[in-house]
Length: 101
Image 1 (cartoon, rainbow, N blue to C red):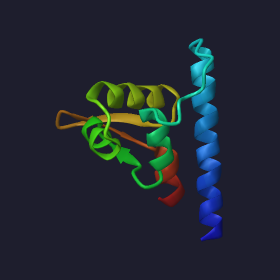
Image 2 (image 1 turned 135 degrees about the vertical axis):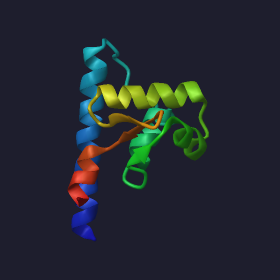
Image 3 (image 1 turned 60 degrees about the vertical axis):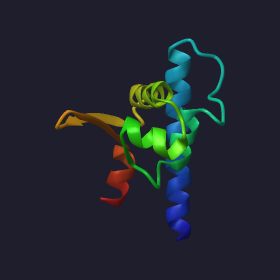
């Protein structure tokens, strides 16, 4: 259990670094607000590694716009990978799924 917790902490640190880098590349100087949809998704990503916009809205009680923006931002930062199946776009944390593959 200790090793798993350490791996999760390392992944979360890596994700936060990727997000910070992506935001800096886009000229965004402020960090992500702790209560933003983006921050909430990263915090809970180990428990929900596959998400749709509707799932983010339901789990984190955020608007459709906030969910879509957060998922897009995390995909642009290479934290989530986007796919579409049967007309539904979903996002998944490939790093996390590979770690437990």
